[in-house]
Image (cartoon, rainbow, N blue to C red; front, side, top):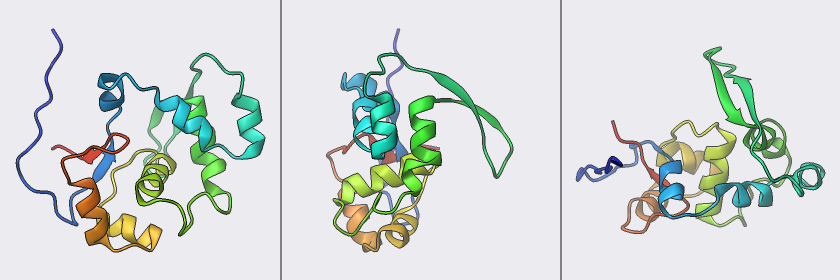
Length: 144
């Protein structure tokens, strides 16, 4: 029996952390890896263009020294591609910029205030976009 996730009725604020909910992707029957490939730098895009499987690698969190098993594609995105100039620009759409930042941050939750600092966009605009009834790219408030 699949567990049904229930979301809080508490309204998110600019202090509420958001993350990418990969269970949302599974429930939507969408392949998030397709989106990841589109965000790779040209060097790695070519390397992963013909990749059909998921390669898991061990990644050590530089702040906590915890070892996490991560998708190799996500790892390359986080450690290399996300650090390239132009990964997130003022011309990147708001939802795309937030999605990219969360992935580049290892999907560690970020508040609209932190996302605003990183994107140069007002936290209130980010909050209104992410806290609405539509879920964009699986970006949801972190449930405690």
